[in-house]
Image (cartoon, rainbow, N blue to C red; front, side, top):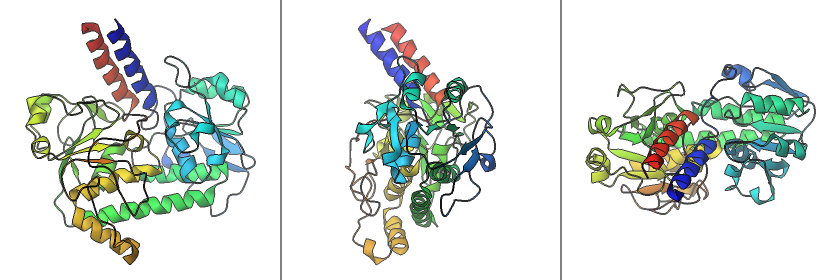
Length: 392
């Protein structure tokens, strides 16, 4: 019985932590990128500032906010990266890995509730930045309480993340920091794209709790931008509206998987113990990469660390050359590594070091966070875990 309760708790935490990648189930459809973001980044923040959010509401901020509540770790990470940490007064528990978060109030709800409206209202914030998974009901309740709420739409590409960073800067009065963050993100993208030029694309499969991202998803965009082929693109899977699919061993057995991409949010063993996986080139040649769950699942600035580490694993020499070319001779002392070890083998990415000097460990993973890549995928995982619970 205790095992059953533990499994279900893990499942519920999984659902809550898929907080930033897919559109919410139900509610208003997300508007186009043009209406969700500022058309161009503001050079100097000016107020009042208005932007239309994912609910179709034109949100106006009259003056630079002094207190911000982030409902979702991607928004919190973005606030840290654009230099606006001091403005954050509260966030959800899934942002606790961020530097400075120890001083933030926790507005997570109890049980299955992702956000406690009462806790948010108690903070009396100038603005709330809500992840796309936050329900329309929660947004309405906050707005009815007189609080300004901007709800982000789902992200299925890096371009949308750039827009989200810029809009966040405009909403909170940190435009310069937002522009600088987008600039260094684009530099990282430039490096990995140069490294991939003329290279044979490795065939990669990302799997998390038996679910994989399809071609029109944010995680797939990270993988392909780094130079790989997402092997499920033509696998004839049944994708959810959010673009994710359950992948069974029979499908894997018919794929050429040269690199297996995993998530440190899933406990060991991460590689499924079935012949289909064990016989892949990736497993046979120890070509697996364990990705930091905070970065791969949160469409925010640090997601570029995922691409950087993948590029270093796949094209170590080309990455070193591209890095030196883009950054200049100052970076020549950097050794391109796959998770801290030269060339191939197993890698993990944490990206918490300076972008010029990746020093990740060759095995294992670092701090946990919000695992996964979508609420629909989370629900699939929950159903799987619940099934296990019923059998224990």
